Image (cartoon, rainbow, N blue to C red; front, side, top):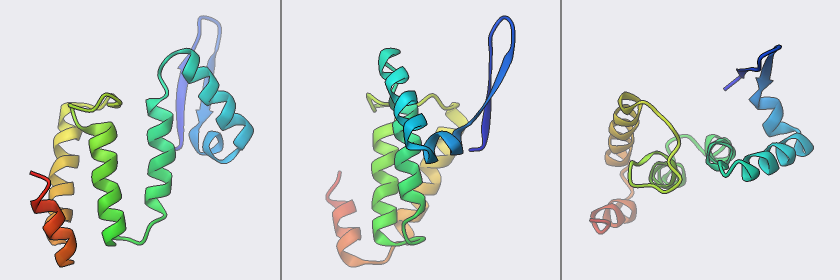
Length: 116
């Protein structure tokens, strides 16, 4: 997640999303813009993913957060779904299921079984 390009009729602008996320005033201004456009989900997802990435790798907490992010932003049934190609969705879903299956904490596995 480094940069994206936005074009207008007269010029092209490069947006550094890491800068948007790190500088609070820029992040707040961008969020206000997205709210006016009624499209806050992509930034919300990026902010939440940033927090997820800081969790201990493969910890129970990280696996739970991965499932929450998937259900909130990636699942086709989510009302906050971000725009991803179906191939990406399928790959993420497959990796998430593998991650959940590899987590060996009994309480976590019990909770997964009871989700159905």
